[in-house]
Amino acid sequence: MTHPLPLGLLAELTHRCPLACPYCSNPVELDRRSDELDTATWLRVFEEAAALGVLQLHLSGGEPTARADIVALTRGASRAGLYTNLITSGVGLSEARLEELAAAGLDHVQLSWQDTDPANADDIAGLAGAHAWKQRTVRAVIALGLPLTINVVVHRRNIARVGDMIVAAHRAGARRIEVAHAQYYGWALTNRAALLPSIEQVETAHTTVARLRQELEPGILIDYVAPDHFSRWPKPCMNGWGRQSLNVTPRGKVLPCHAAESIRGLEFWNVKDRSLREIWDASPAFNAYRGTDWMKEPCRSCPRKHVDFGGCRCQAFAWTGDAGEADPACALSPHHAALQAAVEAPRTDLFTYRRFGAARADHQE
Amino acid sequence: MKARIAPDARPCLARGVRLHEDRARGRTVLLAPERVVAPNPSAIEILRRCSGTLTFAAIVEDLARSHQADPGRIAADTEKLLLDLAYRRLVDL
Image 1: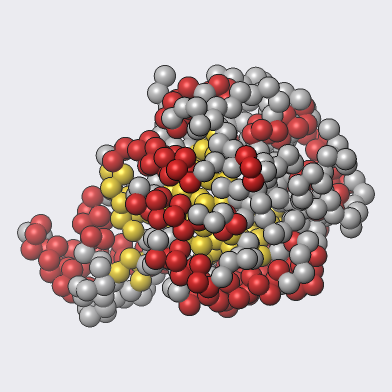
Image 2: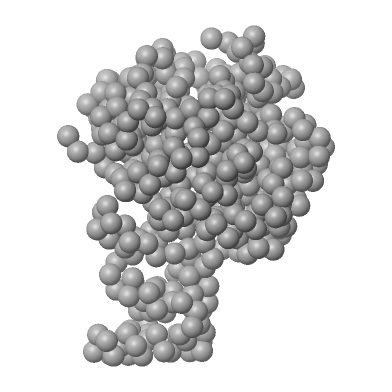
């Protein structure tokens, strides 16, 4: 069986991060520094990725610039021919380091904002002074002429300022902004009652984004990811499992998506043991939900199965205990009502911050 | 889109955008922030000339000569492509 070739690789270089955002996409059980792959292994992975057909490399984390070898890794990836995208908080990143990264061939910077309100931004990030540091880094990125995307995760504590954030990103000189509602797995699921907006807030945000697209594009390009708890159809998660993307964790496990380890019972292979090509082609985790043969009803006979691929496997697992079920975000899923009920559930203002060892006690599993 | 490109404009790929030989798939692609675009062969011909040194007029002239085609038609096609790519922030005019 031949598979489509992967276009993108997300390299989670480290799970270390100065921030503690309560919706972090990293798994609840974080890899420690002592677990991390060494420089030589990452460089081999990048070369194997380029040979396999990967075109874009996302240098991510945690905070990728927490790696002392981030410049060497960027240079190696660039020499392998990969398009290099640094996904950073911007905190802890100096101007001098940014200059080195640009000289090493870095193609693009994606920097996260938590809010336009500085106090609230720092509160969401769990770090005093984070917002101010990010603004300095943004200015340095623009001064170097590097293309910048601002990335904002939207939730009830910042949704009122979605428009402000888009306008501020445009003023700051960003070429793109990604406005993505939180996805409720891992840390964000732990914090769902603190993060999930109301339906009225979501509708206001949709209207604001639509208006600003009219006003500002193409001065700034706006990518908007709607929240799936409020939709009728599931998102085409990863554009299909094992179809376009792979994710390498700090310790070298290769996943079809960053949340895939939340699915119990999947066997993930490690770049320390095998080549990326072998893993892409033959690893049990990648083949588990490739294509459509694994589907049950209502997906199996659904005319949308090639549109959304049954939605998200991790969300299906989280709600039904079986990753082969339809994503409960889909109105045709028998579990859809339960997911919708979360929208009506009471909210809290308390975050469980993303920290090493933080979530074990109160993570509901 | 009613905008026009001045003959002395020097189109170039935006910073962070580049042409890349996608050997695994046997094609040339345009790599950009969070995007991979696979232009058709004639668009690739145009983009290879967008280095910021040639003027729009010179690009059209060069394409017309190498394809022995009508410069008027080449100019119209090239302008349409570049305006579209400029709108998508892939080309600077």
